[in-house]
Length: 108
Length: 120
Image (cartoon, rainbow over all chains, first blue to last red; front, side):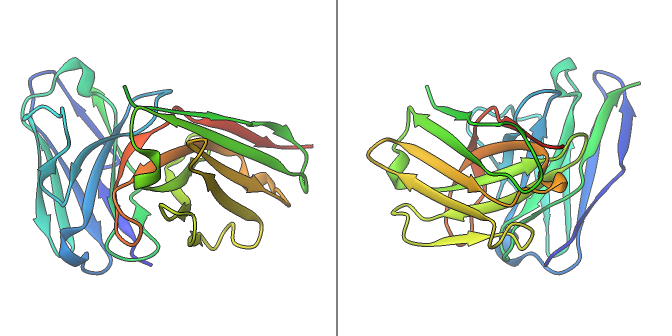
């Protein structure tokens, strides 16, 4: 099973800041089958990025994904108030698909 | 508008059973593999099970294998999860989610979840 480790655990930033979230896999993720989700308190996760760098439908272009192999990054170019949430990465290139433990982006 | 509406959660004693349902609308339910994903209180996401478009194949996380059964009724646009021999560690919000593929897929639609609490 591929273990995904997200860092940092918590990111304290201000609106307008740039956020950089990391997701590191214990083995190479085949075909860059990596997704990112956003979850606000009390809500379901929402797909942001799939295929490591493709934005899902309706996702603003301030969200971008990059990386390959074992190292992946989610970047939020300028934080909006609604972006303060928990973010999870997921690999789906190997069974069972697995999630990272999450990074919380909080208001500084 | 796409909707996935879970129901059937609640409080159950250890060793008990529950059946969750997920009613889908706003998309072609029968064209997608479907999954259950759970989230224990204050914890991260854990994939539980997946079923093919037709319902002919299923796959489970080791943590629930032999105790949970996923099924679907495409005529009713509904996904199910039969949970038996429940344990305290099964306590979680259970989400149904549409997946882009059976063997390899990300979750592109999510329901709002239903809470299952296993406690005496």
